[in-house]
Image 1 (cartoon, rainbow, N blue to C red):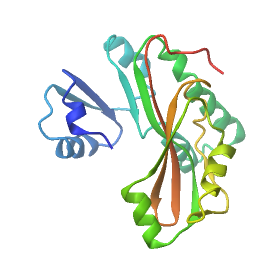
Image 2: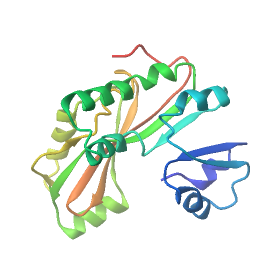
Image 3: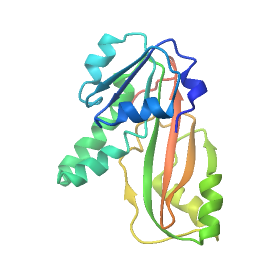
Image 4: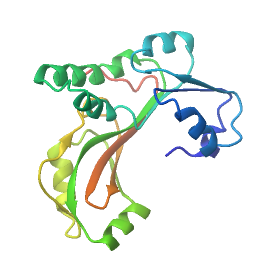
Length: 201
């Protein structure tokens, strides 16, 4: 999802991913990047060490935070307490990153839809993008989706537990992303700059 020309604006890039193939795929996708260092690690578990090692770095969580819920469910860490603790940890990131420029693109909710192949292609090629000056609840995002006659959401949608990653009044963007013809996601993204960080809510 990252633009190569945007990445080339940075004088140094440190990328962290658990997947052993991620570094090779990233370099293949983004050719010509200079000063790229790759680390195979769990960035969230090592976040404090990374922040200490790179005190002036901007931080980007690219399609990562919303995946934590899926990882928990896959690994059987799905009790009410375990998921509540995960949501609390994700909400605490804005305080841990206070004073930094940081951003995230993550899943908010996802679930099944009924839509034609033409409509899937339409939104895949040009996803619906909406701007918001504050946090939208999951119910509000579903209401927005329900306003589109050409896309019928149904069944149970997954809460990726990321609704409090950004502060309540942080401007953000929502993207309706057709992950597959019958399963779509609402993505949330924003940049936070020093001075923009609010108290946790």
